Image 1 (spheres, rainbow over the protein chains, first blue to last red):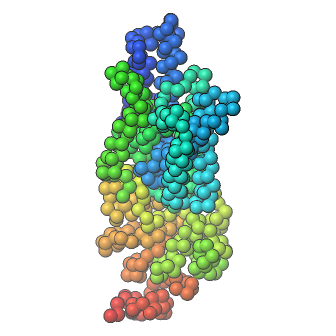
Image 2: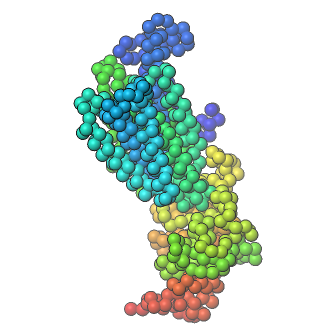
Image 3: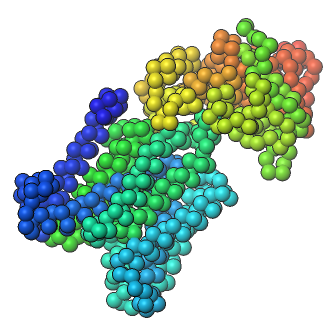
Length: 342
Length: 260
């Protein structure tokens, strides 16, 4: 660790800073909420000395929520960075290939067309997660199939956009045909939330996200090569087609699993890599990828805090918060705050 | 000149093209270590396709390209990158990259799977910056470099790859006169002093005539001629390439004029 920090020069300290901020924000996340607990009690509980209701609140209610936020932030940010590099597009994010749209179609099918599903014995929340996951997976398969035909990033990006529009249209059709009660449930899902997970379900999120993050970190060398363009990357020994497919798979795994648990979380995946670039002042993925992941954790946990902190009324929709953070970042990128390519 | 007879790159019975279109047939060419060769021909004749095929970025329609006696298209991507370095016309999209990182990317065929830079790699990067006269750009980002400076950085990156063969697609495009001269003189130094085989496509007739050891001419009918610049002018081969285009080549001096 110390060697890594040294080798990365001053930039390594930023990574340490992001990690420390993440831990502090996570501790705050465990302490704050509808009942504010003293940090000392939270600490005691984490050390296994907690008692009574406080321990239950920390370990069974807030811990899953903080971990969900951390995993979602890390995963979406990493997926966003992969897509921005693979498609040479600063406005690409995890949703760019229509994966989030596919998840929405899956969830809409389950929630809005409920009469058809009423016979299913599965609990509703599990059914929703599974539907989101399969929806995203279906779109991922379509994209990979198309990749074999077009084999060129720019065309693939447009194809993903079209799939997104198609998914939105399908969801609209389903919405128009559904009853108000079901529609409300779907709209709530669309607002995003880190609150839905229980300690029992958490591994289903944490394991795929951990695998996705490891894959993303393993791709830092070819991602760097892609920064000088696909042909130059090829001449540097990169198997561009294979790297693109692995990156799309990884992004799909991350975005699909996270959307299944949290709903479509807006802007985190798109904005966090840009914030990380602004701090780290580099495009080198060996620094930028870990930096983006750590910053994603910090910012997602911060957004979660804003959503449920007592002074905000405890009922802000997650996507309102992430959009308030993310949209200005995107505007800043568009207005040339960062020189991203030429 | 330290020209040796050792072949750097060799093409035999090569047919190039894309899709079903064949651009040139039965190409036989050799690129020796230590020589600077210019590839000349009108737009659309297949210069880029030939370079991409020689570099292993495009598959040949027939025939083979060999480097050190081994088939370029049968090598793994990494192995190929250890033999042939490529500089393409397109400005790289990663404007936020700093110059040193770009040049260090040239070490990718030699680094471990994380792309860690060792002392050897760092030395190769420094040497590449020195050889291409680009040290003063160190520490800047690509976005702040002019087209000429950016081209130098990309050549330094290819140099850092420490390959016996260097192929460049129109390295002097979009550059002003002094920058064009600087780039080709750099290539000449790399070929003559470092013993690399360097081939570049260009529309810069005069630079090619004055600074290159040999010319490869591609005619619109798919024919290919190779030889010394003076010979190209004297035999009328150079004039044949630009036939009917209103460009007149002086067979004695090799200079060109535009007919009204």
